[in-house]
Length: 197
Image (tube, rainbow, N blue to C red):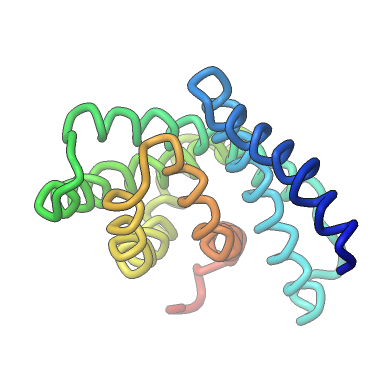
């Protein structure tokens, strides 16, 4: 990179990016930022999963309604995560290792089931499922997501709760969760009725 371009990047572009980032994560815009991140990454996760399913011939064409629904589920889960992390930090304040471990346990025992229920509930409404269909799907599939959450999130949440302030929690959560969003799309849309996977 030439010296002129480097100077342009350092003096004009970088300060503007920092200013936008600070504004996005300000109290005034944090809810919009968190929900926007969750919405877009849930949709992206489904697009990646469907691309895999198309390449492996599990699907014959892109299911736009599925992507729309997964994207909307990211919106509702984004709201839940935004308010959950705020609530968790108000009720269990602090950053000591003991406090962080307590937050992780509460997050896994309360926050994870809340997010998973919101995910399946949103999709049940969007898909026009009956209460019985919703309950059956939760009984069949939610435990797969919950088991994965126990493997993925405790170490990630240790970093999240120990290092980051509340306003960056959903951002970190979403950066980690793109892979998890791909997995949730797979679990949601795979038929487990005849296999033990």
